[in-house]
Length: 240
Image 1 (cartoon, rainbow, N blue to C red):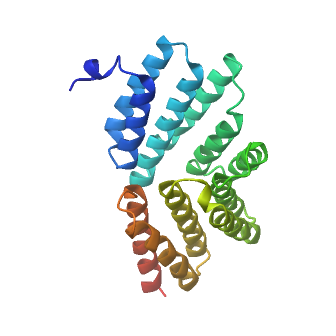
Image 2: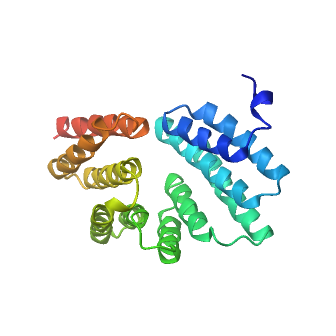
Image 3: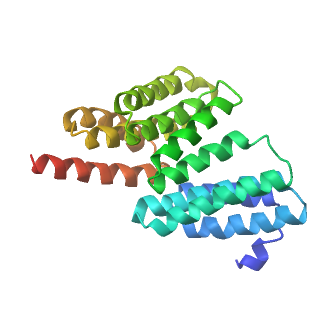
C-alpha cells in the first residue's frame, strides 16, 4: 500500500492507526501516517485535529530520542511543541493549552533545560482540566523535573504522589493506559534513584515496573527502557 493510497482516508482513523504503530515500536511508519492525517485534517480546516497529530509526532521523536539519545530528536520534539503552540495561538484554540505546556516540559527534559521543564510541568498540572488518573502521570513527570532541577527530595516525593494518584484512580480508564502511566512513573523514579546512587532502592521500583511491563506484551517501548535501566544498574553495582 502506497502513501498516496493511504492519504485521502479518514484523518481520525489514520491518526489512531499511527498511534498504534508508534506504541508497537514502528516509529517511521507511524510518522508517515501522522503526516497523512495532518494533510487530511488541513483539508477539513480541523486545526484541533492538527494539534493532536503534532502531539503524536512529538511522542514519536521522543521514542527515537530515548532509543538513540541523539539531540537531533530532542530538537525535533521541541519543534513539534512550538508548532502546536503556534497553531493554537493563531486559530485561538486554547482547550489544549495544558497539553501544550506538558509537551513543552517533555521537550525541555530532553534538552536538559530542567528549570523550564519544572515551570512547564507545573503549569500543565495546574491547568489540567480533570482530577483523573492521567494527572498522576503528569505529577510523575513534574517530580522528575524537580529532581533534575536540584529539588531532589521534593522530586522523589512528587513522583511517589503521582504513582499513588494513578493507583487510586486506576478504575477510570482502560488497563493499557494504566500500565503505560504506572510503569513510566516507576521507571522515572528508578532513574532518579540511580542518579542518587541508591541502587538497592532503585531495584525495588524497577521490579515493580518490570512486573507491569512483562505482563503486558503491548508495552514495547517500556520494555526497551526497562532493559536500558537494568544495564545501568548492573554497571553501577560493578563500579562499587
